[in-house]
Amino acid sequence: MTAAKQDRLKIAVQKSGRLTDHSLDLLTRCGLKYSRGRDELICFGENMPVDVLLVRDDDIPGLVHEDICDLGIVGQNIITERRLELTTRAQPSPFMERTLLDYGHCRLAFGMPERDDNDRPVDGQRIATSYPAIVQDFLVREAIDAQVVEFSGAVEIAPRLGKADIICDLVSTGATLKAHGLREGETVLESRAQLIQTPVELSADKTQWVERLLRRIDGVMQVRESKYIMLHAPRAALAKIRDLLPGSESPTIIPLEGLDDKVAIHAVCRETVFWETLEDLQRAGATSVLVLPVEKMLA
Ligand code: PRP
Ligand code: ZN
Image (cartoon, rainbow, N blue to C red; front, side, top):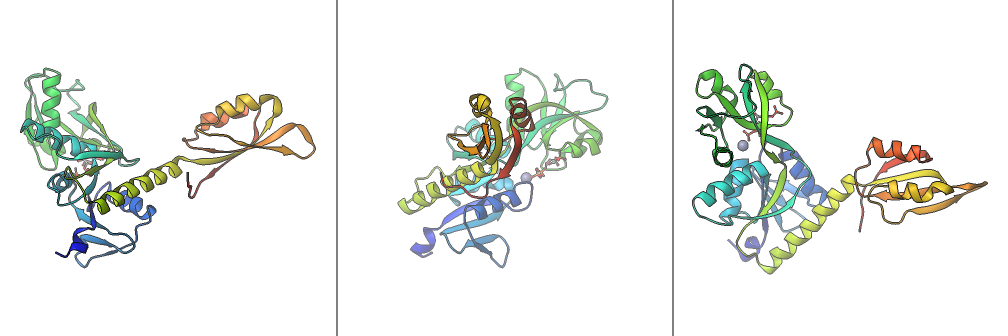
């Protein structure tokens, strides 16, 4: 391997699944242009020294922990499972947990057959899961004497096969549980995508690129939340309306021709603008309220 090649940042991303499209889209929005290798498993960065490896999500913490990849994007469910698994084997800090991302929201929850009235396991039950360390940790914390049965896939069918009484698996829409006649119980862990980094110290060059990428990721996520709001407000209600604008610094106040008692307010809001906020603004006297998306922003 040449020195130049070694200095390229390697990011592990899920090959096909709930995080794939979002993760590649995030890197593209950070300015990365890439071409896919012939095996489709590596995206070579053309305009930055960054390559993306497309791998199984379960392999991502290991690839980052073993310093084969510098960064990885993976669900907190998998991060937590691997961290617990390694700490029980007395291997501390397997990787650095960095920016939490704004996609991949799901939860690790119990799934109960309809005839089971509980929302969580009870003593003596068997729980099928691909997250044995997280479930075991939950059982110890809650002092429940139940048994974990490890499944690597198709956890949902375990109760019907008589291999378990209940399951603990990822739920996002709940469709999979429903399709298998299971009811969603207690949530064990909320999860979303997160960036992890190798525990090994990076070269100065790589460190610079990591920090640059992290700043761009923050920018991309901020813009996704940001909206440009325009509205008309009675001068008398100005203070109240300014207070209602979510996450905006100093709004622009513009006089309206021929209307002495009214002004136009333009503001960039850096937080989600909910319908409730618009209704509050309206109640405070705002009219002609317009909310526009923000394409790019340099803070
Ligand atoms: C999870 C889980 C279910 C499904 C639930 O699998 O194992 O099969 O998602 O989603 P739903 O509530 O929207 O139906 P995932 O796609 O993460 O694949 P993996 O666990 O095999 O990586
Ligand atoms: Zn998986």
